[in-house]
Length: 286
Length: 261
Image 1 (cartoon, rainbow over the protein chains, first blue to last red):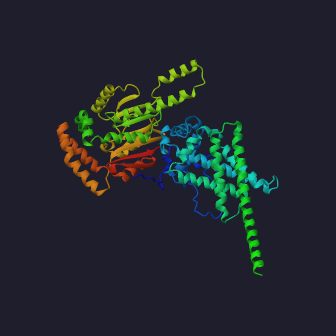
Image 2: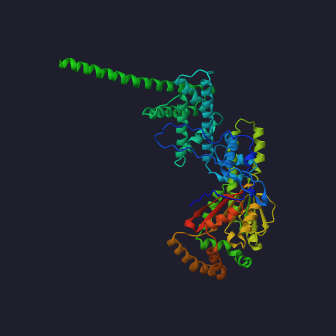
Image 3: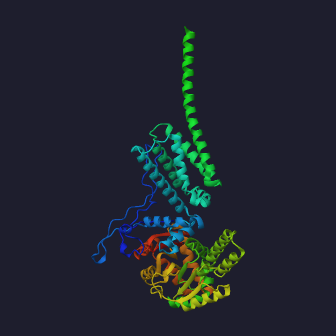
């Protein structure tokens, strides 16, 4: 029986490592994504576990000024971020986390806070990439709104978004297949699926998708398919700067566009045929 | 307490095996697996007299180190022979990767038995044996990566002092691990366990070690020891974070873990 505990009130002055919130001079680039856009999601998507804000201040012994201390979760995020730099060498493992902890001045034993298969590290990285993508798309949207940039047609937009997101994998591409297999472990599937769907939602949001009807599902399914297959192609692509992958992506997006126009063509043809038949029936009856 | 262990030292291992039917080995293996130490870890094993945890630590770390070295060699495919030779030589003499374990015990006899075992089993490097009291450790602050106490904390008179000392000697980010008998919540199992403890164990004590009283003391001390949640609260009071416990065998034994953050 495992038991987790988040104590409500403790003399954190005794804490040796948890920093005061005021010490954080740089905003974390990889804080869990707080920009999640959802329009009437059909299945209740819960936002991924976010770091708690600094806990309420405590008065210390001897009447010291109370300070806000970072929470254990924030420390864990710092360790994981530091660990990313060691992934190319050690893989997505507890060893990388241990090295990361070392750079923060902590004992290597701090890696024991995480699972030994590196799941948390991978999830942390994925959510960080998604946050980066959101920021990028938001920035570009602002430029379009200010009239400083052209609004891209939808197929180009999708290609650009997926390529930007996949390029974030490049520094870790050697060990990424390992990461994918860990993300598929039953234990991790809820989180990894959640991250994937929220990323796809994000892309569609910035692409200008306002639909709340049946098309919502098909659009997400299609884009998810495009993203996953392109990612797999990228794993075994050895062409310079992954040009084969981008060409594959271009083809898949083009397919998707044709498919949707074909679908609407089929629909209007169908309507035309029905009308023709009705007309014929009326003529015949007269 | 000292006298109990003086008489018990020589037969300690044998008694452990017979009392727990050899399962204690599994418990200690699980503890090591949970610790998952990387090479370069400095371990303090308190009340670790006969060295069980220490030897497991060394085995674990050397196998991790071996794998590390193999991986490094694979990456060196493109170096010249000279460079490979030099780096291989350097690593070969570092089979533990700078990991070390200090075994601390209050009882000289237990340490003696431990040293003899080490010699007998062929453990030479990375081991230190220190005489010391868990309530007042003879070490500086912020020294160790991991502190373990396996089946020792229930023999400490002031558990809170021992926990405070553990906190003191650990580095920031260091981990506290405690393996100890604990409370069985399942009522049926609890009755069977009680039966076994009070009827069988002292008898075994008499037969194998010629000492009924010590083993009766043992069983009683297990019953008096605080249950999982209470121990967890005590560990938190000492200043540890992310404290949790894992029950083994339905609560017969529990591993408590905390971090100095």
